[in-house]
Structures are given as C-alpha cells and as structure tokens.
Image 1 (cartoon, rainbow, N blue to C red):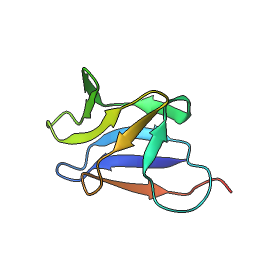
Image 2 (spheres, one colour):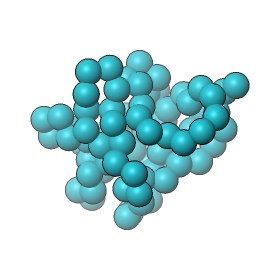
Image 3 (cartoon, rainbow, N blue to C red):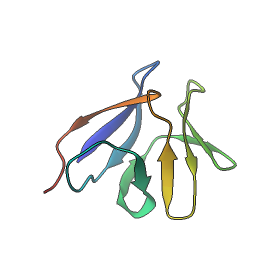
Length: 75
C-alpha cells in the first residue's frame, strides 16, 4: 500500500495498492483504496488545486513531479 501526496501542499490524494517495483506512471482505478482527490471532468486535482493527473479509461495517468509517494509495493 502506498500513499500518494500532493507535491505542493503534502495532502493525501490516494491510498493505492501498488503491485511490482518501478515508478508510478498511472494508477489503476480498481486499485485505488481511498480517494481524497477533487475531480473536475477528467482532471484529478488536489484540494489545493494542483493537477495530479488525467482520468482515462481504466486508469489515472499521473503528471510526474506533481505528486510524491511513500510506502511499500506488493511483490
């Protein structure tokens, strides 16, 4: 389980079940456990207004450098 936070204000955006190693490029919608984000159409934003990513079909494509994350991935 990892916690995705806004890079500007450090608020929680997602609790996400990450499987495997490597960078976080997108978040599968069915693996988002808790969602603290603000949705505006297909945009996923933090409460401070920072654009975190764009919602696409089965996942949220994340904008690199607009978020940080911590925690451990499931192998």
